Length: 296
Image 1 (tube, rainbow, N blue to C red):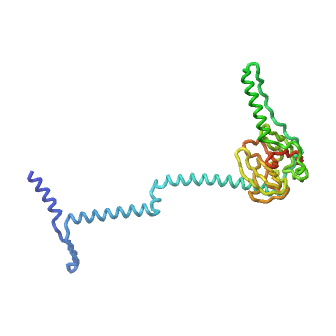
Image 2 (cartoon, one colour):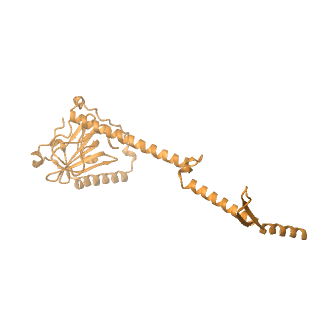
Image 3 (cartoon, rainbow, N blue to C red):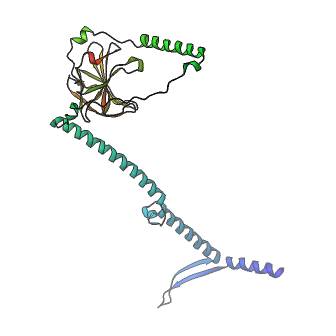
């Protein structure tokens, strides 16, 4: 036991023993410098220098571009950047294609190279679906009465909330309307099914024109009707043009009758082919455009 304690004391004593490091001239043996130190001081000095060297190396790698040369470092960030760049590239490609299409349409309008041969063809008839007949004998009388009551309420609400000018207005009859497009009317004004305008079939890329002078009050895109543009005319008259492939005017622009304002298209969920849905409103009431405009 005593020998072990003596060994420990002798070890610590050796660490504390003082030594002198002398630097001599090799030729004259003249003393150039002398340092007084111990083993403990030497160990502490070397350890401190080692820690400082490690910290300096780590800082250099972390805070300088040298970290990118370490194998495996930055792979995750690079992948994220690549995905982001790919998404941006796809978006730019789509936008560029749409812009090229728009520029091509405008150039065709200016050159007068639009194909109007399709106007001479008859419009395809609308498809109708056959529905199964219902045996009214199997329906309870209370159910039939309730349905009739609801139908009567619907008819009343339509006639009250959504009036329609059934007769021509003399003011509108005196105006000279430009046809927004020349084509075939496949669907007319039907208030019962909330169809407040007419559908005109025309070839793709046909220019859509303003029917009268006015100011653009709306130029937007909706899921159901696609690109829509609306024009405010004099005396509370508004014209609306829906399902366009592109708009050539923006809100606030003043247009004259016959100016090209859009390109016919097939945009929106409610569209089943290239056509223009045109509406004409007078004092908040939809009017039948076919009473005042000749479309073919």
